[in-house]
Length: 338
Image (cartoon, rainbow, N blue to C red; front, side):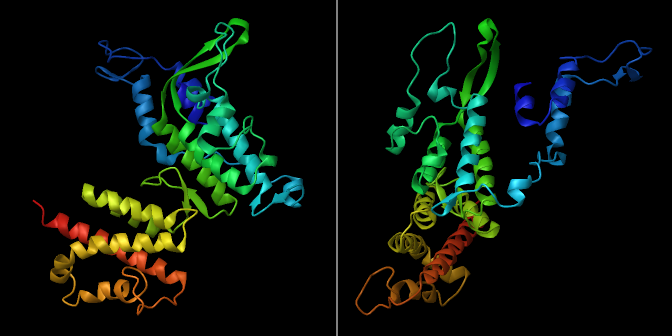
């Protein structure tokens, strides 16, 4: 019931679910008005209803935001500070408020109760210990610079935790109390909502869904390269996965540098060097050309005679080429493993 209330807009679905019988068995009376044949029934119980809802989840439409009102259509009332629109920060603060209202921060911030006067953790200190910036709770988006804003996005990814159960404490209208927290589903939901917010604002970062930089802001890539990262991370042997994770994190981090990208390429080149015999056997007898760029340019060995006058886009090209080759060799290795 709590899941339906949280996941679906409006109250109709939750009310319909509540009206269903918790459990029902086939009727032994063939003449019963609820039967559609011998021992068969028309009505469903809650388990069947919910199972059908899950199976047809793809048919559900996302709740739509209302169309822009007059001030938004006239592009008024939107102040800016730096490169991130101020209204995007307010939208993020409202998003965190929604998570808090649904109990997603109770596990780390605690919850007030009229029957339990115990002192709660200081939310500002909880954030300060992670981000190193004091007095950030309650949220005041008008005071944030860009680094603080992006830092808070990453911090709250690690703080949210979804309650599996809740009960209403009616004494003195104390309100809902939450329990049985699990951060996995909460972080998936959080990443989806924050990434949608960033995408709508035209901010070219997103929270990573996997890898060494899970829950950290990374540069947005197209769907094909995102799929390549996923395949390279999930299709590698454990000892290779660790190195691929590190290379991907070095390359796509929001604060990555030219040196970081170079190190990412060197890491992938090392993996391919170990697979050189496989590449020569399955892909090309002239496999040396794969490593020639890494060796001739100022990437691996950093010798005086190596070429260094190239655009940063060159390193992007090499990184994705090498990562695609790692993924391909993963599949080649997998195909010959019984």
